[in-house]
Length: 265
Image (cartoon, rainbow, N blue to C red; front, side):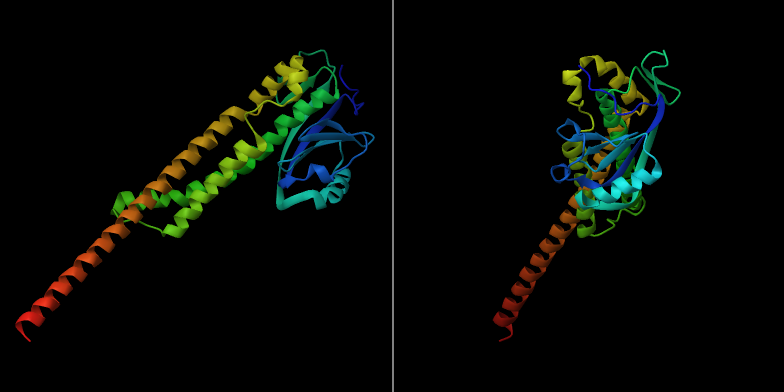
């Protein structure tokens, strides 16, 4: 059985906001909560909101003033809040007679039952998160590219070891967040109890190109990581060669000193 809808309107918007790195759901209590594990959803009269532990809030039919009020209440539960939240929006139409799915950037739903809102929230929240990762990876890509270009043109190894380690650490952190915290490519648990919503999930996932964007980010992460690792290994080899030359010079100096003592004293 589906849970009753918290929204009575036939047309409204879903708006996802990535407000921080994480939201402490254990410390949050809301009237009329519904959801499962990492996602909670509660009604506020005309609208509803879902909370996701990877830092996203999804509003349904909520005015900007109500959003600000809600977020101010939530502020203490947000870890490492972002100064400029990433957002994602989706227009929703209810019971229009059209086949359930997405057409022309508009989601057509059979009804606004809780389970359907949770499926929509899962997709738009992951899309907002992917937008942040895309910007981060693009920024790191722009920073690491000159290293490869300079190495190709001059044959010299640019950068410092500490800087390269920071690049690698940044990429590992993004990858850990994508795979561990958000589980972007995983299906929401709501589908286990409601297999009939699989079609809606697939259509929404295709509309926002979740898998394709995730794969593109992974390819860039792999390329950046390989480039940084390669340059780091070359730096390490260069340092090792330098140490070996120091050792050779010390041995030669010791031999010359011994010869001097033998023949000139």
